[in-house]
Image 1 (cartoon, rainbow, N blue to C red):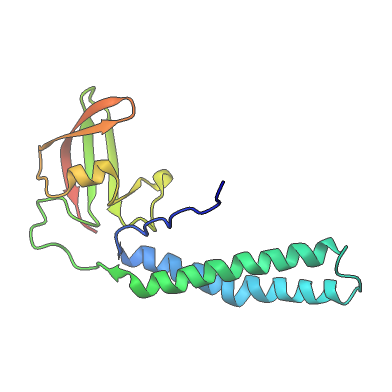
Image 2 (image 1 turned 90 degrees about the vertical axis):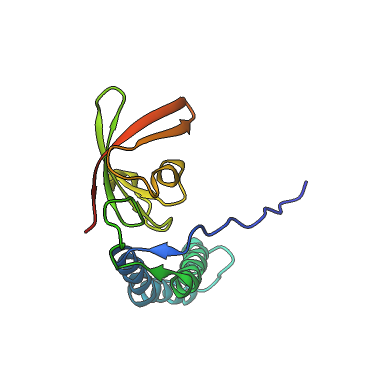
Length: 165
């Protein structure tokens, strides 16, 4: 059996200014703080002698590989992303970066912001532009009805408010 896995798509290459700042801060933290610390611990572990049975050395090298991999990903990703900071021409419709207040059939209210796939965070109510709900919402106006197929069946939401920061 092969270990080959096709590469995952990176998703839509859009990001909000806040999301770009978060990715740049992560890149800075990894490159200027974490990597020098791990490099120092690896060199101290290497100075202890036999590297073949030195767990600190092995773990440190593994951490360096993971940090370098993430740094490469962030560097390439930040080069390809397009920062969307301008408000849309028609602020009465749902577009990228909008905060949308929704109400479901039972009257339960929820609020989401449509962001790029690199910013996805459901705890902060940030949904990816590639998600089924966001795709269904794009271009909708106030009081529009949105139907989305979910794993539990089809759900209906109504657009109650649209805001742009």
